[in-house]
Image (cartoon, rainbow, N blue to C red; front, side, top):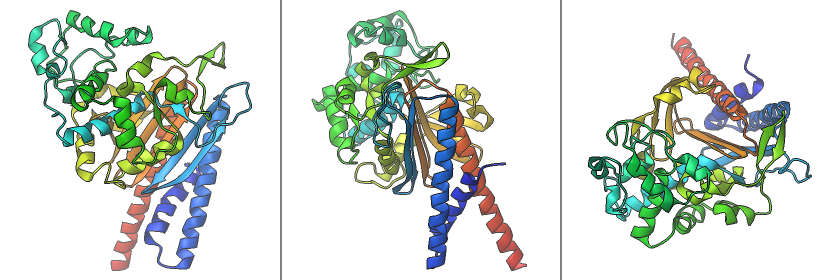
Length: 398
């Protein structure tokens, strides 16, 4: 049996959408309060079970953050608590910001999605030169370069600079023609940084601040290692050893690849980011841009085998910095993130105007369980209520 939370959530949606008098509004408010209390108890209980040092979540409905909370501590052994404004590294959820910023700049004519990468990085080359002229900017952000998954991530983790990594691509070829198959990348994805700098004469971090962070009023979001440490209210990373979580150092390496994994944010920041994805800040992300960003570009069959998610997914694609999942009869726009000591997950349903973000300062797969639990329960409840409405209307008509 699903817990009260999911039943209440569906009722709360209906209550606010259909309320026509004070009693209905009051009922909806009470149901929403029960939703928040129940989910907080469930989420906190799961984190406690696995002794996760700290975590935070935010639930968005329409243009509002309707629930958010923090749990645990920023660093194990210290008293400072996590709250909804605590900043975490969001790892590959940063790719969603890259998709948004790059789409804005492309729409303004700074470059085109079908531009060849070598137009901006003429020294870039694969082993077989014919592939060079096939690789476009769209392929970078849609993870459809055709290159084997996570190519040269080992060099990122060894803190090798980009100018030393790029020549390594001349030793390999794509597994398929660019655009024809999926291969998740961090190095190649981040080359959009070089394109942006060459075409705008500004850094990626500057433009993300100017075009995304400030206009969306993300209160504590930042880019880079300095941005992380400039925030006093920050969660420190933890890794598991000998059956316990232990604090570890902040790994600098992926910060040098900002589009792929360089953003820091709180649950509140990502709640506002979700509101924009749901279409409620069109001055920053217009409806046309959102369609461009979430257009399916390449199938990601491997996602259909993901632990926890595989029970629900029937199709999966990569768009521009976002994944597009067919979750039963519903479409979810999704991305997860994992960097040393942190996990992050963000997802939303445009149809149901609902979004969820979760952050942890520990490398735990629990985040997959929590995400699928939330979405399977809430979507089941919503569809059941929709069916009940149809049945009732039919009964009344008879």
